[in-house]
Amino acid sequence: MKRILALITLLAFNFCFFISPSYAIIEKDYYKNQSILDYINFDWWKKQNDPYLEKYIVSAINNNYDIKTAALKIEEAKINIQATKSNLMPSVSIGASPAMSKFPSSTQSEGSFALPIIAQWELDLFGKNYDKTKSAKKIYKSAQFQAQASDISIVSMVGAAYYNIVKLDKLIEIQKNLVDDRKEIYDLMKISNEEGIVSTSDLIQAEKSFVMSQNELIDYEKSRQNALSALAVLIGDSPNNINEYQRISADELGNNFSIPNEISSEIITNRPDYKAVENQLEAVGFDVRAAKKEFLPTINILGVLTFLTTNAFGKFNFENALALLAPSATLPIFTGLKRVANVKINKNKYEQILQQYQKTNLVAIQEVNDALYNYKSDNEKLLNNIKALEIQKKDYDYSKMKFNQGVISKLDLLQQKETLLYMQKMELNSKTDCYIDKISLYKTTGARV
Image (tube, rainbow, N blue to C red):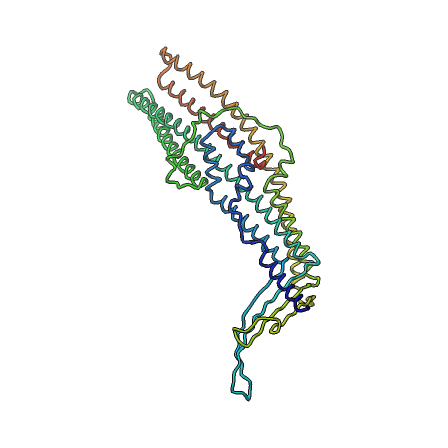
C-alpha cells in the first residue's frame, strides 16, 4: 500500500506538470484585445474632419515599427509572468541510464537499465515566489502603459507631420507668387535704372531679393520632401511613395479653436507614462520583499521513483523500483554576502524609480502647462495676424484702385502685393502652430483632452 501511495503521489506531480497551461502561448492580437483605437482616442482625430489624416493615423497603428516593437515587449512581459509562475509549480524530470558492469574475479559482465523519475516542489510558505510573480505582473502592466504612451506619441507625430506638409504646400504656392512678384519688381527696376530713374544700388538690392526668394522656395520644397519622407516612416511605408500622399488644402483649415481654460490634475495622473512608472515602482517594491525572504529557509518536497532492470526489456514494476518521498528544509549559512547585496540592489532600484516617478509627475505638469500656454498664445497671435491680413487686403485693394487711376506706379503696387504675401505667410504659420499646439495638448494629456 505504501508503494502504491508513493507512486500515486509521483504521478500526481507528473500530472500537474503536464496539464498545466502552456505558458509559451502568446497573445498575437494584442491591439485588438486592448483596443488601441480607444486609448489613442481615435474619435478625437475624427473630429478634425479630415479623411486623409484619419487614413494616415490608421496606417501608423497597423504598420509603424515602433508600435509593433512595443507590442512585442508586451508579449515578452506576459511570457515572463508565466515563467515566474512556473516557480510555484512542481518540476518533473525523467532519465534513462543503461550500464554494463564487470566485477573482479569474474569473467562475465552484466547489463542493467535504470529509468529514474524525479519530482521536486518548492513550497512557497513565505510567499517569496508569489512576490516575484506579482512583480512580473506589474512589469507587464507597465509595458502596456509604455506601449500606450508610445502609440499616442507616434500618432501625434503623424498629425504634426501631416499639418506641416499642408502648411508647406501653401507656403510653396505663396512663395512662387512672391518669386514672380520680385522678378517683376527686378525687371521694372532694371528698366528704371537704364532710364536713370533708380540707382544701381537699388537695382542690386532688387536682384538680391529676387535670388533670396528663389532660395527660400528651394528651402520650402526641401522641407516638404523631408516631411513627406518622415510621414512615410511613421506610417510604415516606403519613402518612394510620397508623391502619392493626399492631403487637404491649407485653405480648408479652420480658424476657430476650442481651448480649455484649465486641465484637471486627474488627467495628468492618468497619463500612460505616469502609470507605467507607477507600476514599475510597485514591481520593485515586490522585488525588495522577495529579496528579504531569501534569508528564510527553503522548503522542498522531493519525490524519486527509479525502475532498475538487468536488461532493456525487463519489467518496470514495484519489484524493480526504488521510491522516495521526502520533505527537506535548507537555509544557506554563508553566501559571500550575496543575499545582503541583492537586498541593497533592489532597494537602490526602488529609490531610482521613485525619483523617476516624482520627475515624471513634474514633467507631466510642465508639459501640460506649456502646451496649454502655447496653444492660447498662438491662438491670440493668429487672431492678430488675421486682423492684420484683413487690413493689408484692404490696403492692397485700395492700392489697386489708385494704380488703375494712375496715382501710383506698378512698382508701388507690386510692393504692396509683396507685403500681402508676407502677411499670408504669417497667418498660415500661426494657424498651423495652433493645430500643432492642439495635437501637443492631446499628447500631453494622454489623449484625454
